[in-house]
Amino acid sequence: MAVNLTKGQKVSLQKGNEGLSKLLIGLGWDQAKSKKKSLFGGLKAEAQIDCDGSVLMLQDDKLKNQDDIIYFGNLRHSTQSIIHNGDNLTGAGDGDDEQIMLSLNDIPAAYNRIVFVVNIYQAQQRKQHFGMIQNAFIRIVDARNNTEMYRYNLTEDYTNMTAMIFGEIYRNNGEWKFNAIGQGTNDAGLNELVKRYA
Image 1: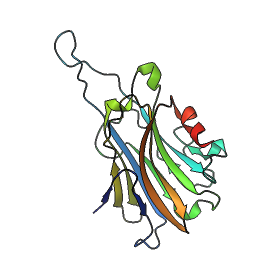
Image 2: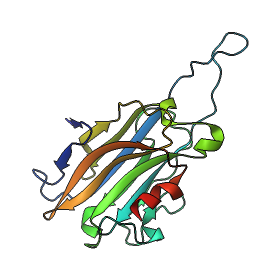
Image 3: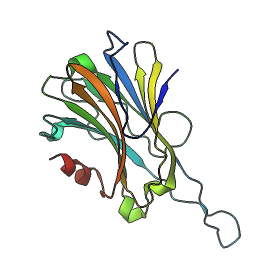
């Protein structure tokens, strides 16, 4: 049974899970139903919202290399320690919309923090924001047996926010931990989001 986390909660990934080495990180969201009416009285169809999940691999809490951004344009880190399973253009359907595989033992010691972010593609041009998204979550699965360990449901009102820092995995005293962040930002896209870690 997965543990549901609250915003800001930090948990150990390896305590009680000796030998944990491979994780599946699932990111999910749904487009909220439109409340706008069309000229003919029915609900107006909204343009699809394309959310993009990305991973930032930090050294000393800083992004030091463009190759340490794992996203739809760079699906694998050079060490093969982090692999993004590809872009979902709509967020339609149940379950994970995007998945990222982590091999903890293969992440070089220089990296101390792995940050999971999601941004809305062309949010400003399309006048879209996370207030139009519902049921957003990040979940952590033990890939050895496909057991969901932790889940963090983002429940705040993120109206006018165009990007989101979902959570992070970080090293602490020789073990990996997870921090449920859930911080919305006004960054226009991934390029602006990564500047927070420059």
